[in-house]
Image (cartoon, rainbow, N blue to C red; front, side, top):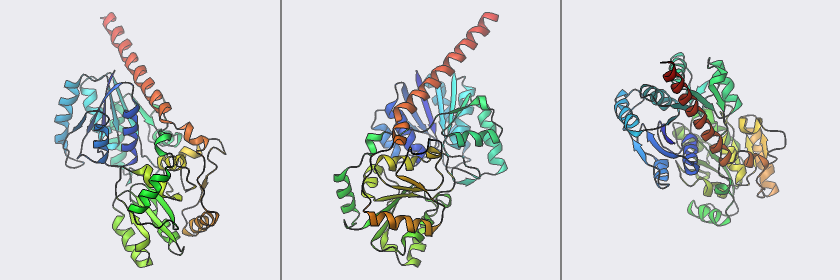
Length: 373
């Protein structure tokens, strides 16, 4: 079976890293098409031996990308086209439908109640998303919360498949050597407590809460991994608080496991998430985790992640919790059951079973149509 993954871009975001892990463990032949410019994940995927096609889309409304995408799908002989993220979901499903691809799948990685991929959900966004959905065969929701949101948009339940994200637990296992090397590279003295966050720097992630929480805490550094439109605001606020020297912004990074090893506490104060991939990765690294919304944990039995604690998006609550953890010495924790539950092998198996089922259904339908003729 030959699969083409179509994604809007390959910067170092959660959906992009999830795609990397999926193709790294695929048991089918896979290629990747990125509509926009290459990014850090593009090189990482190529290093796996997986072909990556960059189609040169210059902006969200650049319809010229449809021509190279059409040629790629028509000439590639793909059994499955699997789209990721909003723009790729729209264009990828359209081209795959026109090309008669047997199985057309899209994963909804980042749908909230009020935001889609960090942007407000407007009537036009919802209309376009629904139009794109009708062109495919199945939409994968990465959590039950995401599935419920899709149903509220009018997507029929029988066209939604809940397949949670997956991580490779071994890749995120705590590495003492990486901790020492990374903290040295970032000039973080060994005695300081590092509070970390991973994600796109956008308002919904509420990293501003962490700035306010860390400001009064001595010997504490805030380490944020990611980039986005809130970067300038966070830098300006850190200066106002007098802690610019205690905030480190790495930008996008392909070294997330090493950066997690350098942290002492992981914090994710977002109040709206589709899954909460970074939280699971932090748990795999043995970190105590403070978090807001996290469907990945909310949908598991109580006690599945004893190192995780849910808090309101309030600086005082995070300040108190961080202070308590710092006083206790923030020992590394064993990876909880939640990590194994979301192991990448389970994710890959379910995705590939979906491909096979859709392909077989299409084959049976085509055969039956031929016999009636």
